[in-house]
Image 1 (cartoon, rainbow, N blue to C red):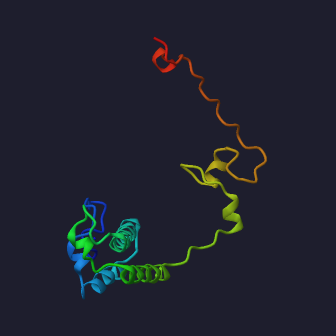
Image 2: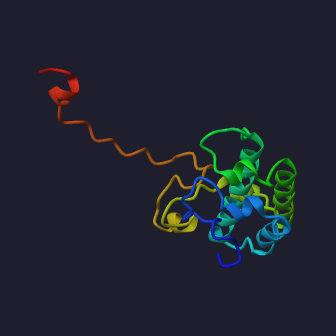
Image 3: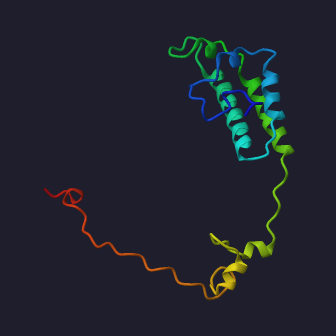
Length: 161
């Protein structure tokens, strides 16, 4: 995503966000704006928005929980500008983005009755003479017989020498 920070991606492999995010003063609102500006148009952009905001929120709480003399933490985390106030700003941004998404359409009673099968619609199933694609059909096809195991488990699995 060109409009999102580079760390808002599954490719980000670091344990923490970059140091400049932790020390960002006036830049923090710009980081949040980059998430607001990116369209939540498809799975790819939506996933990166959710991932990025989640990582940002995680580091906000890490900055709150880190001990000042804690060993094994990077200095930028110990001295981070992230914290409760910034976490609240991230949550506010999440709520704002969610409020701009279209509401899911309710499922109609007719849609709820149809059980979708891979590779075709209810009409196609009826044309082929198949039964059991409609949840109200009283005579669904029986499930195919399962193949029985023809081999015994190995002696190693059974714990025999």
